[in-house]
Amino acid sequence: MTPPVMIFCAGFGTRMGALTADRPKPLVEVAGRPLLDHALDLVTEAGLTRAVLNLHYKGQMIRNHLAGRAAPTLGFSDESGEILETGGGLQRALPLLEADPVMTLNPDTVWTGPNPLPRLIAAMEADPAAEAVLMVVPRARAAGHVAPGDFFVDDGLPRRRGDAPTAPFIYGGTQILRTGRLAAMPPGAFSLNRLWDSMIADGTLRAITHEGGWVDVGRPEGIALAEAELAR
Image 1 (cartoon, rainbow, N blue to C red):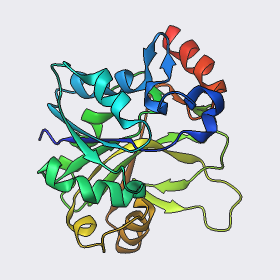
Image 2 (image 1 turned 90 degrees about the vertical axis):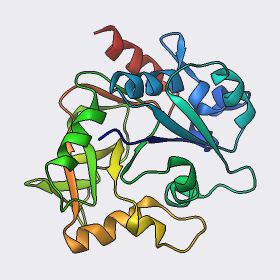
Image 3 (image 1 turned 180 degrees about the vertical axis):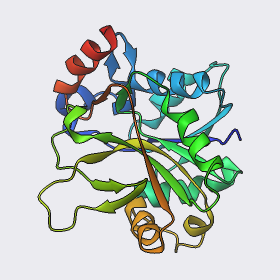
Image 4 (image 1 turned 180 degrees about the horizontal axis):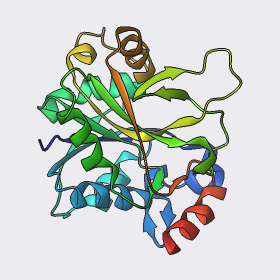
């Protein structure tokens, strides 16, 4: 299984403050290279050959940065008219992805240790009942992440924290997803959380835990944390 990867690049990156005044967040540099290049390294290291990027804020800068890149093969999903959030953006990109399942990857994270993409593929291949597999990170090891935890996970089955103030795992920003439920959604802006919640209700959402380092680079302070993690 060699699914294509959707890389979410359409956001404004407002939490980055002045760093995104003149560039989109995927082009903010960590250890001398744009976040997007670190994300594409994961794709090529995993042996995957196609990636699609959705573009909105300063999207032409991303196109210019990637011009001439040999691998992976790239496609671009235009969201210049409106930002469609994660679910709507992925749904619009399905004709470009041309596959089922597909993977998604947030570029504002830095991973060390085992590449998460092959592990997600292997987990789905081993579980035909899984509609999606999320890579989660223990909240205690999620450097730079300031929000509460997202999920409890019991034997690979994630559930929301509900009324609990936090949960022991966060979503790490990458997954593998079968597209049937997504394609059936009404078009427009919506979050992938809507799909995950319906899968949780049906018992078809899975989660596996990242075994290496992970850094959230959604804020300026995440840059130094990510550079320290890469140096280790």
